[in-house]
Each structure stands twice: as structure tokens, then as C-alpha cells.
Length: 503
Image (cartoon, rainbow, N blue to C red; front, top):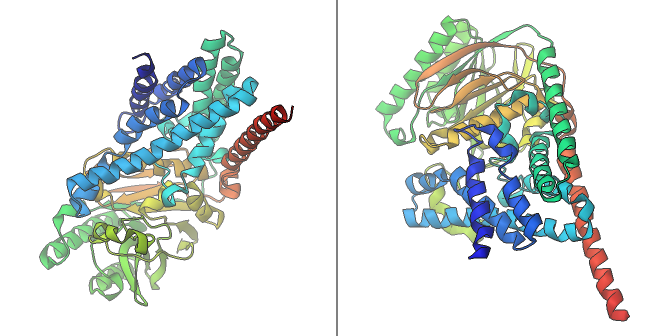
């Protein structure tokens, strides 16, 4: 019964930590909630894998519960199979955290004097690894819990979201070690660093940005529900298309020059559908630009694309989604995972795009990562490095219903605005849509289930952040240092054992 605490205490900590994320947004909780499993590990030195696993399991179960509905309701899987696949994902992610705690415990035996710093180093290394694991799934990284704490998150313009994660885990680790050793030196230093980052953030926010000529933009949320069953129902499809047209005309009446429709606004093959001409005539007649997400069909392949329609060139530019959703938009390794075909029945089997594309509106350039792509910091910052002066992301979040997922997705997208110091426009089919300024302030927001549009003046920006230029150097440095420490630990302990055997 004594050992049961190594499961239940981290388990409760993981559930508590989730409260710092959307929709609860009690962000100060994460400043101390992780100190509980860390203290348990450094105090008892027992069951490190179980401690890490037990923290992550409830955290990811609560964070990702909406996946069960996606798989069962839209993926043609039984509820039982959906639960099985969901648990496989949660077990996999939780096992990675168990492994990290196991490695930290191992390395700490070789480097006991720096153990407090091992936790943030290895934690960030794992978060960076999650951008590649299972083709990439960096959802609800601990740094995203601070999205409403504007001064702190400004550090992401240098380090990316990983720098915020580092600070949060460092603070938790310092609390644990201070309690254990009764020495508060490291906690004081961590608090000083934490405060310094906040002061830096206040300075940046107060400094503001160099305003260029404003561009009036509008985001359209047509509230296209996945249960509307527009495919094959020409009457419903026409009604929904007309809803978008009416909202667009209202935005034009308010002098919007760029109008954003969401991903797969209506399910049509845009190039070959007569509704294309309606949008082009509207663009030409009113002298406005329309960016809209539709399915494209070229050379025998389907693409998840966004089209920029301009007054002079009709289809001015097209960006094809590069990072597709595995088992949602395509089936990886079909020979092995062919049984997953049923999951893609609703959305088709898409081909990945091959290059970044920047769209042009007047003299301004912008990038348009699609849906899932916004959770990948490096992909988004590449648009800015290539010259994007603001960012647009379109998404179909109708899959998620009224779960926490649309709110989580919006908070993740907002971090990209801060990292790259760019205005970000987000248009979704059912919500949450919004316009975010370069410091993470939400200027406009359309909640779930509303058929609305929002309009705002934005300022395209030229200056690039350190993160936009150099990417994940901070996270890569953490991974490099962690790897070196782990290898040195193996070498030292292995060398000692060999020496003893020879003696």
C-alpha cells in the first residue's frame, strides 16, 4: 500500500496540471503542480518510470478524450475500437514520460549536483521529440498553459514555446529540491530568471511594433457542421455556400480587403465547380481578395489546399497542405496499416504538398498553414523566414464538436503569433476563430457554433524574431546537452563496472 503513492500522487498531479490549459486556463497551477511527482522521485528514488507514466496518463487522457468521438463518430470505427486506439496513443505518450523520468533518475546518479536542471533539460528534449513522434504530435506542450500570461510568453520569440516549458519545469524542479534540501538558493535563482523573463516581456509589449499601412481583413465562420452531410446533398450545399457569400458581402460593405474562409469551407472540387466563378466575379467586382480552403484535384491526386482569389488573376496562388494528419487525411505505411483505411473514408486520401507558398495581397505577403500544421512551430516559422508579413491559418474543427479541442487548438495557434511577432488570422468552420496580435492578445474571437464574421485592421510586419530566423536552436541545445549527459552517465558507470571486474 505504501508504494501505491508512486501511482496516485503523480496521477492526481497530472489531472491537476490540465487545469492550467484551455478551457480552464488556470495557468499558475502549472508553476507548482509538477513539483509533486518530481519531489516524490528525488525523495524516495523508487519507481521513476511509474512516476512519469502516472503523471502523463491522466494528463493526456483528459487532454485528448475528444479523439474517441472523432474516431467513432466520423472514422467509422466502433466505440470499443476507438477506445482501444485511444488508449494505445495515451499509453505510448505516457510511456515516453515514464522513460524520461527513468533516464533522469539514472543520469542524476552520475551528476547529482545538477539534478535540478536535468528535469527541464530532458523535459524540453522530450517535447521536441514529440514534434517527430508518430509523424509529430506536439499537442498541449506544457508551455501552452501560459498562453494567457502575456509577459512570460514573449520569451518564445527567442526560444519558441520550448523556452516557456523550460521555465515552468525549472520552477517546479527548484521547488522540489528546495523542500528536500532546505536550501532555497536554486529556487531564488529560478524565481529571478522567471521574473526577468516577465520584465523582458513587459518591455516588448510596451515597446510595441512598427506600424505599417493597415490592411482591413475579415474572417468568416460559416458554422459548417460535420453532421450537416453536405456531400451529395446539393440543396444543403448550396445553402451553406450562400451563407458564406452573404457573410462575405457584409464584410465587403465594411471595407474588408482580404476575406478568409476556413478549411474545406464547402466540400467541392474548387477548380471544377461552377461556384468558383461566383467567387471570382465577387472578387473582380468588388476589388477584394478571398482566401478559401477547398479540396483540389490535380494530376490524379487530391490535395487539401487554400486558394487565393484576386481581382486581376482569378486564382492567384495555391498552397497545398504539407503536413497531413496521419490516419485522418492519409494512411502511412499502407501495407502495414491497411486496416486503418476505414478512418479516412470521410475525408479521402490526400497527397502532401511539396513546398511552402506565400500569397500576395497588394504589396504584402503572407503564409497560410492549414489546420494541423499550426501545431508545428518550425513549419510555421519557415513561412515567416521566407518573407510572410502576417499569418493566416484555416481549419475545420467541426470534427471536435463542443469539446476542449477547438479551444486547445486556438491557444496553440496563438503561440505562433508570439513566436514570430506576426498578426495571426484564424478562420475555422465551426469555431474557435479569431484574430491575434503579435503579442498574443486576442483582438477578435468567434466562439463555437456561431455563424459570424469578424473584421479588424492588421499591420503587416517586416522585422523577424530570433526564433523566425533560427528556429529550434534552444530545444536542439537541450536535446544535445541531455544526450551528452546520458552518454557520459552510461560511459562512466559502464567504465566503473569494467574496472571493478578487472580488479
